[in-house]
Length: 373
Image (cartoon, rainbow, N blue to C red; front, side):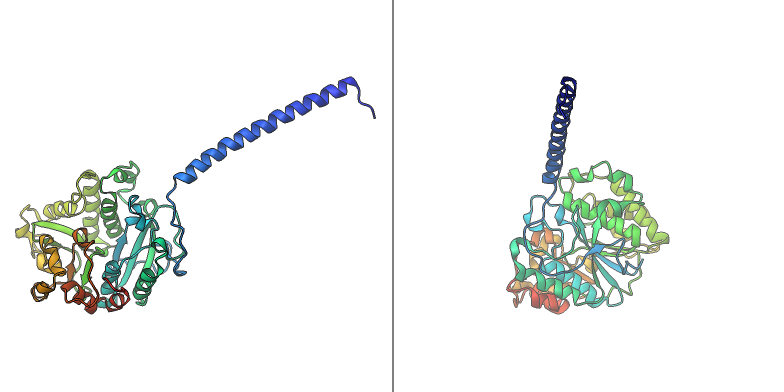
């Protein structure tokens, strides 16, 4: 059928309208895709390496078994937030010394559940990844710690973990992430949130547990020799007085937070809260005095920090072996001051105190460490 002039005009108009709509849609799609691509590119990326093993690591708030309030031991790994350190781009990472801390806790506290919480930003953890494909050094360490039935690996989403706690709203202001020492301060933040949620025992990953801590009455921490109450070892009950202390720690953390002060948001918080509980700023007065501190015990330095920060090299020097072992003979844990000692390697089989402690208290990890520990 032949179309009239009017019909041709209508077709031409419809064609023009179609072209305009199509062009606009393409432009809108292009702009939307540009924005999505920009957002995708801004996200932290995982390294392009093959998984070492299919180890499922679920969210601590959802996975079973869940932490038993007051009867669990916690470690935190937060270095996935270190944007400058490519070694920790993937949040699931352990070195031999961290694995040693975990094994020693599991070995000496068989009736406690040991939870290792890995902080992640966006990506779910579905397998173990190593840095630059160095599979041989990573997998045996995970195998060693997971050979203990009371060790559990879990992931933590910072926002969900803080939800429902007194510090939830403060986290939203972003002050924590602007810290000069963001990895350390996130670690400080997490230990206080964990203790508020579950109570139990928190330990830093640079310790070696030397004996059982299951029968030590809860609600305690320890002073180091420099008149500071450290936060590397903290035990609190999940209810009652211990829970109130955890709440005080969160309150002090957010109201005195200083992103330019490395220790002010960990040991500083612990020191201020303990001084308030005990009613004195004199550390020596409150040591070993549960009555003065309303049942909260501050152990002296022999318990957790028998080798002081300034003598950290003693753990690594063979000629200091006997001296160092004598100093820590009554300690619950040996704290090896990772901030200073991280770069100093130990040859497996050496006669340094740290090597001797590892061989005795984390034997499976020590055997799996390779040439250096």
